[in-house]
Length: 113
Ligand code: DGP
Image (cartoon, rainbow, N blue to C red; front, side, top):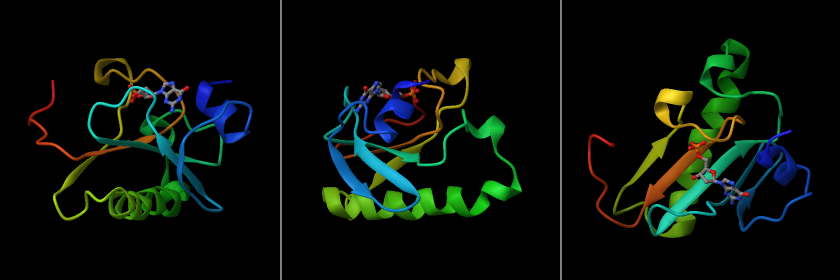
């Protein structure tokens, strides 16, 4: 099981930002910006975007809606923020449990490294 699987089961603590029936959002342990929140589905077993299909569309949409909510809760919505899903080795994915990064609170360079 991944570290996020343990967080979703409550076996490892996290700094919770938002939670509902479908998702959990919590502060990244190694923040890359003043706001750096991770959104994960409560449904386990999805490693990354390569595992998703049409049956996951509502869940993925809900993760985006949650990103907006998180940005508002963190006070970065008006200034702007970035949502990122790293998929696979070349993208630098380190935890193979699908998660969306919400980054904001500073100027973010583009393209990313
Ligand atoms: P990625 O590279 O997209 O797989 O990002 C994984 C992120 O997860 C990375 O920014 C650090 C974060 N992370 C890893 N372990 C933990 C943990 O135990 N708790 C929290 N809150 N974040 C973690």
